[in-house]
Length: 248
Image (cartoon, rainbow, N blue to C red):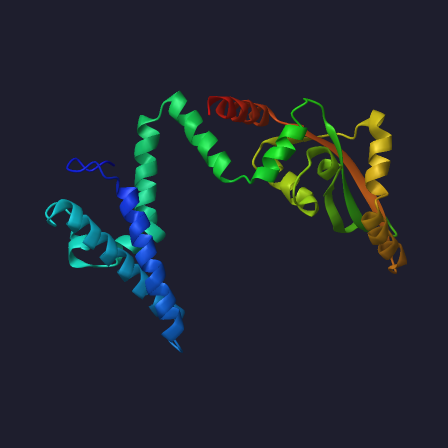
């Protein structure tokens, strides 16, 4: 929020405060010794508030109108910022639900989904945005009688090769997360894509796991084939991301 007297921005004050806090923290770490981490954190929080209070007083020339917590130097404000009161959050959520509109509901959902994603996951959505279903497998360890014992590997796919993600080994985690958020939906095995399923199931790392299962007494491997594609919400989210990119 701009200051009406001199046009300065409070974020600039925060930057200066952060510099002072960094110097303070370095000194503390050098002499902390056996002091507990919690005490050090409390000291830092107190220092943050003191620096911000000093800067605000320098801008305003007085403390009138400042919250009591800032005038007194209490660290309760920092605690509230770091650990918001759940009762207050719930009360605000109730108020927002009362006054919510269709547009604000979409904005809230879009914001919530965006904050839960990493860039690699957006790359995955991009690779699935062609509208087609894509082959995916689970590798299960089953008993000789055919009963599932445990899942050895989950969400095996060609996503790392097709999406160009930076952390290829995390592709199964990304797919599982996107599915749990409702951005992806599962479907049946794709019969015309047998070659792709075979490629997934015969990767070097997967063949090694299969060999271990085959060598285990009473166990054998079994692949569970299915497919994944964008859900309706996933398509909406992807289109929203494109619109946001074009608006920048």
